[in-house]
Image 1: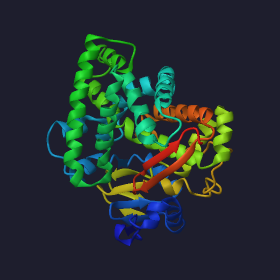
Image 2 (image 1 turned 120 degrees about the vertical axis):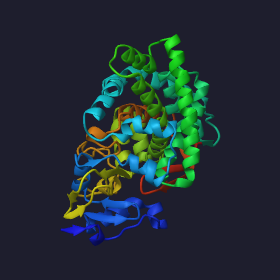
Image 3 (image 1 turned 60 degrees about the vertical axis):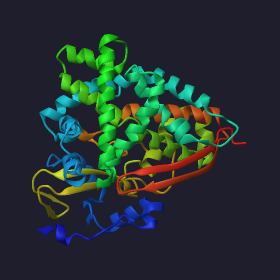
Image 4 (image 1 turned 90 degrees about the vertical axis):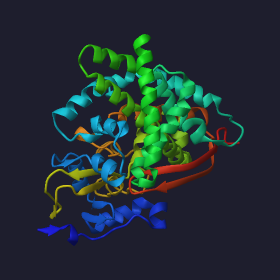
Length: 399
């Protein structure tokens, strides 16, 4: 059987990749099912990638990332990571950890927050000036998810800026750059202290919100005190960064197609379809990481235990067998197969329903209220892991 050394080598550092990664990934996928890069083994074939996401012989790549790649020092931040769901592979522990969040933030549970999300979106959008170019990331994209988190933990809305800033910083772990480890640890430390304070406040003044629900679960013995704390940190950790970028991506992709923007503004029932297609054609998550927890054969290659493995979502989303004419944005594209932005199986993102709701509510309001919205300037960067919006300036009334 072939080994890693027999794999073709691909890269992600070219200017062409940064500008247009998805045609390049699709081209790689036409030539090879599996390849290797500086970071590990790259799965390019759609079927292979989808299977790997739920393969029981592949586990989380988080421990290797935190400790081996980033060199995170011993201390309470690394201890938090070791106790969080990110460190646990498939099995009873992971199922137990997922249960309370599935209950409160699953597809049905998150609906209780829809009115809060709509209120946040409306309040923030109405604050933005409509007659001059605005930095949409600062004015709209960051404040929406961080303000929703404020509702979850019954915090003043002026805490949203802190939540957004720390979320952006801790997500720098995915740059795989050890030079950023000290900043990440400092941001985590501040975030953890903040959550300790929010839990103490919510115990003194319980309410009808997520943090109080989680506390009541802990008091009833359904989750441990440690799990309560870890989950409230985890939710703020992942809160702003990904959702902010996803809102910005959706705005760019939809406003850049005036006929689509006009249609969804007149018929907001099309917004979920439009958001789903933006997540396919330019996914925020370009790949997702796994680690072989035992020797495993994939695509005819023997990969030893400990191998870092990356399922390339960007390649899968541009596979013409599954998505005919993948370079075209289609409002009539079938719902299946589903996009892979949020992973799948036991490793699926537990915040996917609330994140999608926040994107949809933002797009629905802005398309309806600002049919002539005009983009002044925007910028994308694409790493092997993510699509990021570096800047986005618009005039809301389009005049």
